[in-house]
Amino acid sequence: MAARPILGLLSLVLLAGAVLLQIFIVLAGVTNSTPVNLVYFLETTTNGIPGARNPSRWTLFYICGADGSHNANCGSPVPALPFNPPGRSNFDTETGVPDAFIGTNRYFYLSRFAFAFFLISLVFGVIALFTGLLALCTRLGAYLSSFNTFVAMGFQVLFAALMTAWSVLGRNHFRNAGQDAHLGRYAYGFSWAAVACYFLSTLLFCIGGSAGKNKDTTRSSRGGMFRRSRSTRSHRSRGSFIDSERGGGIKDEY
Image 1 (cartoon, rainbow, N blue to C red):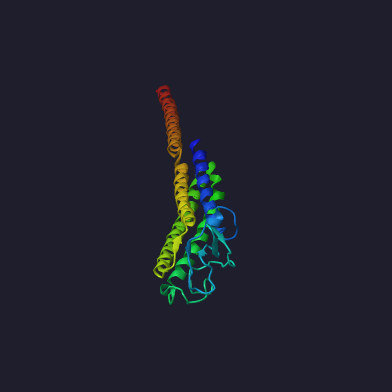
Image 2 (cartoon, rainbow, N blue to C red; image 1 turned 90 degrees about the vertical axis):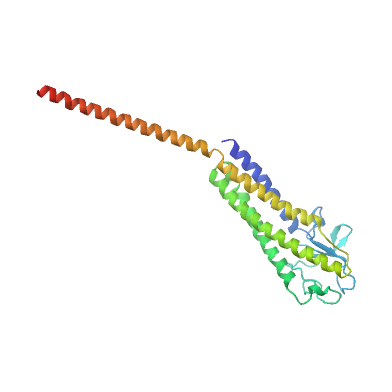
């Protein structure tokens, strides 16, 4: 059916868009190319914090400085970089750090779990890209791709929600301490736009999988009725022939 490959192609385009947005988030701090060099979750001034970049920006793997609107002077990459200002992977000092971050692991775990959910979402998104090729021609491929995309969407929602939680709380605490802090609009836009793309892709994969299902069922039912009808007629014909033979033999004997 023509609708299935069209819906499958649209789903793949949206799915590829979601994965691309996630890759932009991964590359933040790695390269100075636009729009990657605009991606960060939280920026704050660090007045009174010794040794910290001023301002400091948190990305997925780096803490960067700022050159106008672009990321600059990024530090060494840290796998699963946590948001933990007094910690060793961040400022490595409690001096000048807002009191709300001292003596708690809340923001550390929020950001760490967000990172894990992001990676799981990206993995399932890439898997869905490969299974999505099957969705262009088979119903099973469409349903399988829908499942993979749904899982990717679920973990991306968790990542975006946790990222929003720690970055908004962090901004508020820095502002309360007299710093100038704000959220990264590109990181927010890419994160939640990826959720929307995954959702629409999941929906279209499901619709593509169900496309033509009623038609195929009708054809199968009609074929079954025809075969049963023909079988019944054949049975009746054989019965009539046998009955006529028996009746003829009785008349002859009589």
